[in-house]
Image (cartoon, rainbow, N blue to C red; front, side, top):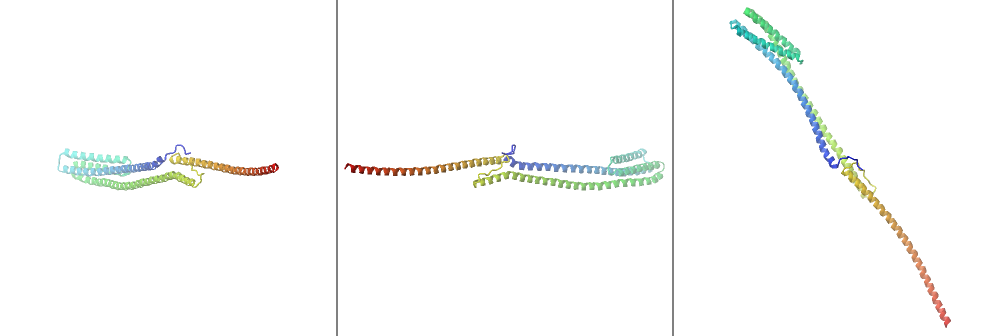
Length: 318
């Protein structure tokens, strides 16, 4: 008997492509998830690098614009321009430098890889702002003394610009490195996904082979048993391992072979009984023929005796 709960043959045949499809979909989804995660990590890394690059560029732009404003204010002082206009220019450039320093300090506090560079640039900008303010205050007293003080401010300006430019260069290099790493990660994830898809295909192929063998093995066994039965081996049987269509066919063949073997056995026994009866009948017929011959001979002897008696009686009567 087949095992209870076995799948039907139709279900097994349909299970192979369905299983293959399910495995491929599962592996495909897993590969897509890996690619998405790599993309998110790369995007986060690039966003951090771009933010740092923008902060450094903004700081360098603020220092350059403030430096130009300081010289413009000093030029206005030389021509005795309106003090309010000059004060507004200096206030604007001071606010711009203060905002740049705070932005760089915030980047440094964020704990990025350029924290030391951000702090160094912020200190350089703060030093420049102090020297520019000092030079402007001295210019209000003596323009020539203010111009000499601006030489020190120019040195701090060059240091601040160089520090910001160094950060920009390093950030650009890191951004290129991040892009290269992103490409490498994408290739690795693609290879990983391709490997999983190949594994899925191989798994589907292996499953199909195993399922095909599981289906064909009982069919081949049944075919062999039918051939042996046709050759006269009525004891041939097939093990029904499942309760599907093939398993039920094996059970039906076993039942048919058993009944056929029993029927032929009965016919053989009946033939033996008929042969015995025929032998016994032939023996009885022989015995009856012998007895009939004896009776015929006795009748002939009796007829001869009667004839002799008749002759004797005739002779006596004469």
